[in-house]
Image (cartoon, rainbow, N blue to C red; front, top):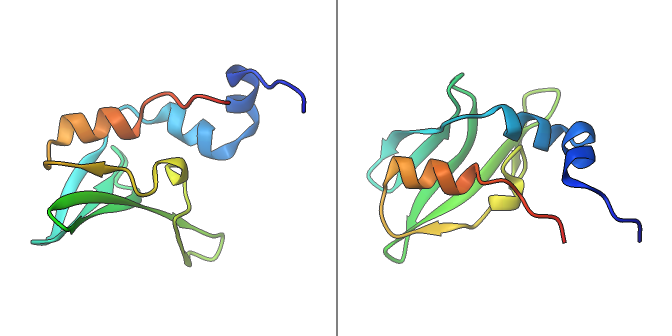
Length: 102
């Protein structure tokens, strides 16, 4: 399998292109157990759901027709990442961390 540098992957992978352009995420309450995760441009990229006392990230993407793609979108590789608290700065930092390629 050929080695792919992160730089060339960012240039060709649309999810990584969008991810690299995001600087900060914000949380918007939907109800007591669900928060929407939004980009600075108000794009919905996922939800945080309170499950068994922890906040679990559920990635969301949309197809060309606007239909929801559960587990998809630019943060698909962060799907199911969990957090102890709703610390917006910490959540944003972890979700937007530079991905590592194995």
